[in-house]
Length: 537
Image 1 (spheres, rainbow, N blue to C red):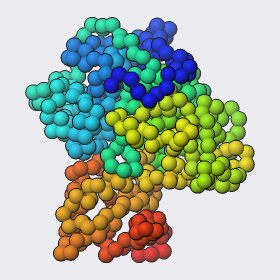
Image 2: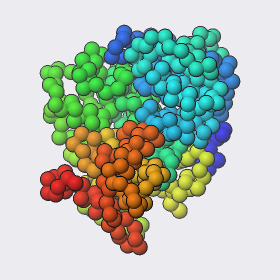
Image 3: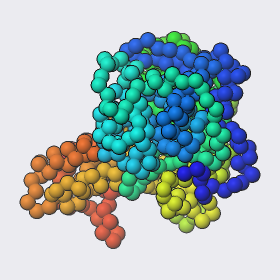
Image 4: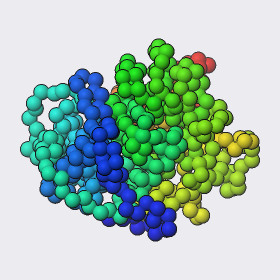
């Protein structure tokens, strides 16, 4: 796959022609060689700081190491790592040689990793000791498996590695070679995201997409060369990559990378490095709200899902709302940095996109009304490049006028501000992770004794939502045994955050028009139970 077939060769692509992740890194290495770019703050070992020049040198070395092992333009490299410097080095190295970085969730099951590899065609993997067994079983025919010397900063004793693997450090022991000149619409990243049916979709980001994300996301929050971004959200998601790493690189600032969010280490690291910005989601905010906030810190703003967040006063940090998806690359809706924002909203339509909020008939909704959000931009530049190997799904993601159908519902206010309402798609939001109910239902329906199954979101005080399964048993199946079998199958085949928190065996399911399961009734049942209005079972 060398380019995105459906992406238009529009005049807009000329604004990013010749600009890639590698171009931007080399530019920063030239004009800010001694400025710190990446600061690694592990929890159990000493960290390290790379200047722009040092980081560019290591990226070029890893790129040459991959090239010498047969990775070239158009090849797919699966990165199955928790947050660590090797993650950033690898995907920047892929961009340098024209390869495509396949970013996968480390909480994925062996079955899921096997699917990611077979679907993308990735035969080269970069992983860590704690995951190498899973990866090797998922990709028994991998051409190469490179393993870090630690687990997200936690040191490990020397371990026996599969015969097809070698240490990641070997990639650094190479003299830099020439960079590949990628085209603006050549693929650079592959990000798997939950869809509403079947397996996760593979969202393609082009080189133009990466540059768009870097420039536009940074502009929303005014990142500059003096800023220090604290990065703790997982790098296998677009949030950490585009809202933190890429935008910091564009600004010429510094990124402080943690293995993961830690409520006990957050403020210590923030104060140690005088962090000025962070991209936040609900779970860290809720966890931090239960801890003491230092009297003084250096944060000047956070980006999150709501402007004027109720916790602003608690943390003494202005919060700018924004809304985005993997498919929208950056935030098509965002708050304003320098003027007041309507509290509780996700912001206003960003000037880089067109926004429409439509009723069921396709007409714009009125003030105070809620409708379906659609976004229009340029595929391969300001919108994703398409779904890999799925032209039908790519086409279905857009309406006849070229608007991207987000699947989210938005409320319009009289001042032009927009509030997030809910989803129109059958999706769950589990602690910041998007989960398709259909993914879980597919596994449950494979269990012997299951006649019918549906999964809906149940409320959770920390994670917002968690999956709950309602299962109709076949005659002769024992309810308690079946429930355990369902959970066992889910634990084996799904990432842990997708495993139902509860399996309810029921005689029948509520029905709506044409016999369709009325999932809304099940959601209301769970919500009422959580509020203590009904028994929990």
